[in-house]
Length: 325
Image (cartoon, rainbow, N blue to C red):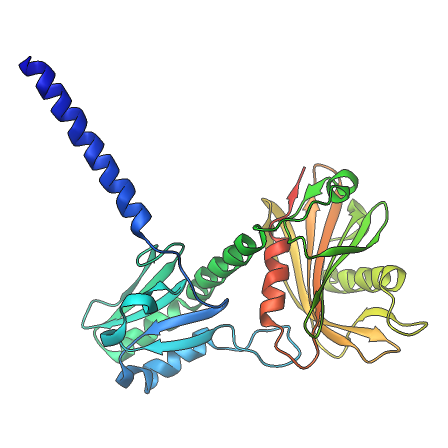
């Protein structure tokens, strides 16, 4: 009997611990906040001085590839004394803590879920500034990846139901059902969404494996290809007008990874030949070695007179969700 009571007590104890853990996990509220908005927790004296300037140089520097200067993030400064309650629920938080050994810490789901909290430490202002400068790319990437994931999560609530993309191009890609297919061929899709002042657009197509060669002229190759695709598939508002690349703006080019595959990234400004239209584009050429081809997915926004940062982040989130079979 005593052994039986001990067994019941032990099971109850472990069950209670498990329930407590589950209860704690459920207790975290949902994170909130506008896309690309970072809460900066810092004393007013720091924010108004050199430390604040260093923070703004990291978080608010202009994004390359947009027609007008737009900050990477919108910043909301909060003094530590009032950082409590609902203001702690923002999805991305940068905290500045003094009188501690210089360094940086990245934590997940501290006050809400999902959430990234980056804390920068330093005994002096100079140490804090140095930590910010040394970790600029890591800070930006951490927050941007969180925002890309959040935008994709939001769109997944109402996913599209198109099957032709997978059937014809052998890939899946996530975007909201509000997007529609504007044009479709055997190896090309133009997908678009109406927005308040224009449209958000996606192009998906495939190229032969020898269409792009990695050399010093790879950017010119990509621009030449996208201009030919624009001429063939994306006509403008007047007869004889079509999508091209703005040659007065030097494109950004780099390499990244999408679906564990080497990918060429190009950002620039698009234009419409013979018409007054333009805006930013982001082009990803994914090297699909298994199927001996390139898969190109491009996003471009037409949103005159308004900020385009968040539209481009949405397109980037969609593109990076691509999975090639």
